[in-house]
Every structure is written in structure tokens, then in C-alpha cells.
Length: 443
Image (tube, rainbow, N blue to C red; front, top):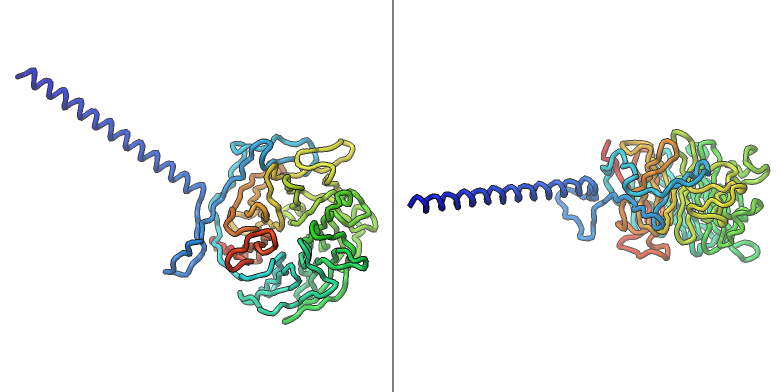
């Protein structure tokens, strides 16, 4: 009898032990799953577009995610030393990339205007109006948060909209509030029957705009590779990006305006301190640059540029510098005697097709550089190193809105995105193209 009792007690003890062990394993598994879930939420940080209270989210709506750009040697984004033109740093791996100071997305997306016809550039007036261009030739305006139906200006012949050409860049004069002047970049049919580009000064009134004068013309143009971005720099001069219209040799020809960043006065003159006396050329060796932005603290100029089929670039622009196209691309440095500038970062074997860009000057992301991506269908967030070293690059809104042409920061800290799904290369979605406002959550 005692032997039977001992056996029962032993079995009971073993059963209790097994139960305790099983409960411990289950607890550990649950803890691990919770940690994994928390880590995923921290990385993705989803936020929904703003909706009126009590309304259901559309089935097509997706959340915003911030995705680190994968950096596989020889196959993806690469980082170099473009500021100094020195030897390239090794390609950055995900482990070596420093995480951004804050991964939380501090904005809420709201549609501002839709049904647009390939919007290209926007500019903000002191009175709150938002002007923007549409590539087929219209200058439009948003007043008090609403899109005015009638354009302020519709360009006529010799204006031409073909391929990547049309009405592109737009910039407001520093004294716009008093003189109403603005500047536009557009393609036109020249006397020889070919395509060229030019810069106009226009005057914008309360209900219409009119052309005042041509500031610069005969900029090489074609179906593609027209450049097109114009910006007023901190020095008050106009900076203009131009493409090489599929003639790469133009980028290395100092006498050609193709494949360059140009710099002129707002009256069309040549600044005395331009690198080459009497020439509007500011930098050369560009393929098809489409973005310009100055870092607010340093005043350093950055540019985005399309590569041939990959190796899209982010460059730090210096007066008189040669950025190498078509002699070098990506990590190539060329002969030392050529003194060619290499990019601060490039897309490696992938493609961004970068276009408009802006520095954030307000809020928790102040100092970050944003770059619109067309083929990449994303907004690149570039966290710069204080010493122009390895920037950390992450992708926002990947494939959520399609092709993103431009990004800009408004006076109140709101960010604005332009889609280009109706540009002949995208897949138009409902209500495309759109102007999307990213409203600050930190106000």
C-alpha cells in the first residue's frame, strides 16, 4: 500500500512539474510575441489620413510607413563624399546607418485639391495663396483652401507640352507682395522647329497673370531631359536646372546651357561672381537635375538628379564644379586631374527618379531633407550628417500615392505633396492628380 502511495505521489509531483514548465514556456512565448509586436509598431508607426469624426475609412486607404532604404552592396542606395570630391566611403549597410532622431511621423495627410493635370511646381504667397503650374500650360491658384476653377494664365504657341516638357518651374519674386512678379520655366517651339526651353517673368494679379518678358531662352530641350526647376536662392538670384536632351556631350560643353545649373538675376542679367564671366552657367556635368534646396543653417545648395537607368543622385552644388556626366556616375571618380564631383548619395542599382525637394525648417523634423520620388513612388527622408558624411535615407509613403513629383514646406510648417500619375508614365488613380497637405501634429 505504501509503495502504491509513493508511486502516486511521484507521478503527481512529476505532473505538477510538467505543468509549471509548460506554463513558463507559454509565458515566455507570449512575452516574445509582445516584444515582436511592440518592435513592429515602433518601426512602422502607422498613422491614418485625417477623416471626419464617425466616418469609415475607405477600403483603399493605407497607412503611412517609414521604411529604411535597403543598402545591399552593388545593388542599392550608396553614399559618397560628394561635398569634397574625395575618395568614396564604403557603401552603407543597414547596420551602419544611424537611426533618425525621431521615427514618429509628425504630420497628418489631408487632400487639398484633386483632378489636377500633371502639377509640377508650387509657390506660396505672403497672403496665403498657393500658386502651382500644370505641365500642359496652366498656372493655377488655391485661395482660402479652395482651388479656383479658372487658371490665372494659359500659355499659347509657341508654348509646347510634349513628353517631359511643358510648363514646369515656378518661383515668386522676393518682393512679390509689392510687385507681383513671378518666374516660370517652359518648353516652346523655336524658329528651327525644334524644342527649347526658356524663363519668363510674369506678373500675377488678383484674377489673372500676364507675361512681361523673356529673361533667358534657347535652353536645350526635347521630348525628355528638360530639367525645369527654378528657385530663388538666399542671394536673391534665380537658379535654373537644365537637362541635356539626350545629348550627353552638352553637359561637358561650357558654351551650352544644357546639362547645367544656371544662375541669373531676376532681370535676366549675369551675376558678376558667376564662375565663368558673362555666362549663366553655375555648375556643369548634369544629366537631368530636377530638384534644388538650400540648407537653412549653412546656405549650402543641394540638388537631385536622374541617372541613366539607376544611380540617381543627391549632390551638394558648388560654383564652377563639374558633376561628371557622362564621364562618371555612381561611385566612379574618373581621372584625378578632371576634378569631377561625386554624389553625396545615389540610388545604386535601384531607381528613385528624384524630383522636387525641400528642407524642413519647423517642428520635430526640422533640418531633415525631403526628396520626391517618381519611379520610386515614395518620399525620401534624408537625415544629413553634420560633416556631410553618410546620410540616413528612409522611404515614406511607398507606393501609397503613386508617382510623387514635388514636395514643399509652406510658411506655417505644412508640407505639400504633388502626384504625377497622369504624366504618361504612371497609373492614374481615382481623382488623380492630387495636391496633398501634410498638416503638423505638433502645433
